[in-house]
Image (tube, rainbow, N blue to C red; front, side, top):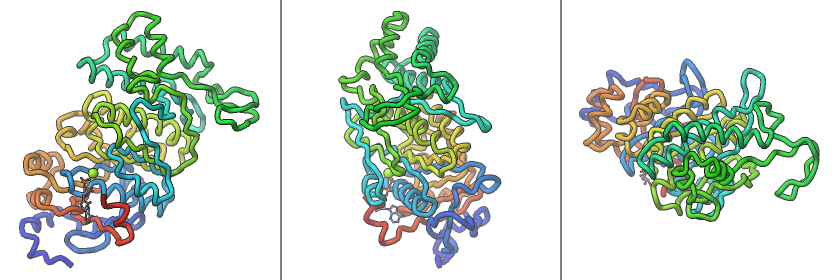
Length: 411
Ligand SMILES: Nc1ncnc2c1ncn2[C@@H]1O[C@H](COP(=O)(O)OP(=O)(O)O)[C@@H](O)[C@H]1O
Ligand SMILES: [Mg+2]
């Protein structure tokens, strides 16, 4: 057990700290900083203990964020059989995913990924299924707005917003896709593109970005946006997602490895499309299964209001679908300096604050309403040590790595 007298200023944390903060079920995290007691977290325990299952993690580079994400996902997979999807910007989750028998999908520039942002699956409303084309329009608009923001330094204008809505609706309507879940299928038997035979229901082909851009160009009202999208079309440098979805995967553990993509915007564009695709293909399709979506380096989404809003929306919609978003960022400023960023942090009932640089620790202390002792811990913490906040109950813990886990959690 740690001696309080060695903790110096950190002992001032104690009046606000709950030394027994832990759940009775869930996965092992590590030890309480003060009492050395084991700490467990049951992210799916629900309200009132945890109003929502989302997790926010921040800390400087090397503070232990990715290790915590790996431990949280690995232990939830082993304990709950949770499906897990890693939006792996740096390619650092491959070892873990291989170890767990999961699948790694490499995202490469200029190469088709088999992931289509126009993919749509039925949602559940009450006990009925329906195709939420309105939400899809909003997601496509946010994606195109992110592109527009990055390339032209402006948001979409009124004509573009209207055209996007009309065209996306038209693309689904032309395929006979309506709000009726049955409209997603052709009612006949036959051979699928992947060579398999089915009888009864064949999923319809979804619209693609090329079809969208073609219509935008032909309607001739938004020539600037139509031109802007050319690099994003099949065969061009960013044509990664202009394709039908060819990944027919029942895999439960998947990482989308973006390590070969070098520039920040392409990483953001890819992360955005992948998150939207994971939402359609895995979250909506498996409502009752426990699912984790790991989004390390989430500050990328905070670059633009539209992408930040999208991330917040996924978090908002996720609770109903047993989906946990694990969001980590080394740049806390990006979150605290934007309304969407603060919204995202507030949505997350579980927070782990790792070591912070002295430059932004005051702002963090204020935002999270921390004591001086907690602030001191944040500037002096060793890798793996953090402030844990569960539904605003605070203590300090140290994530513990078991010897057998070292080979796949340390990079
Ligand atoms: N819980 C921990 N116990 C021991 N060492 C840790 C722990 N967490 C992180 N480390 C050490 O710090 C390094 C960086 O951790 P990492 O999680 O990758 O940092 P980041 O916050 O940048 O994601 C690890 O490779 C490991 O050596
Ligand atoms: Mg990291």
